[in-house]
Length: 191
Image (cartoon, one colour):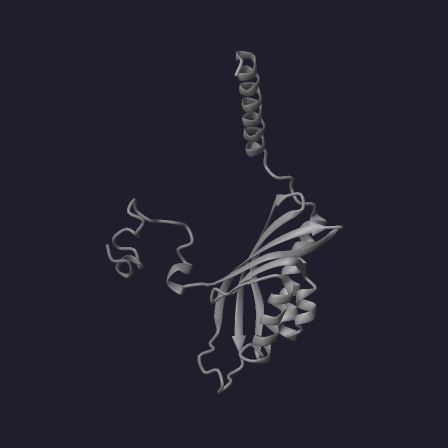
């Protein structure tokens, strides 16, 4: 390879790094009040459709390529698969559950992409067929996208909140990755 070719490749490579570095330093464009309101309404409508056990309305909120990781770790891919899973559980163990949103934080990560993290409560009316169901507090993460002016859910992941860890969202771990001595979780993690 000639020296001029090598120099040209170096210039191209360095300019690519400069563009990448510049893009990493730029913060995403802030949401408009209208977009933030629409994303918040989408989180609330998820809860409303759950409470009505209206799976068609729930999944009208989704993109076609939706991915859904539920609280027990099922990884459902595609709107029709997620719909089938929710229809099944809402005919059975979730037929008497209700959901409420305690709080939600929303942020824009790109002009047409948003993340919402919601603390949710699920309560079930006692049913002898499902004696293990008990009230649950979860943290749900929604990734939403805006297409043709409409916000939809593209990815969802839900995690049960461990009451021992709930008051400790701010990380206070020592260099080993375990909580320091005296921390309430210290004995829960053997060294």
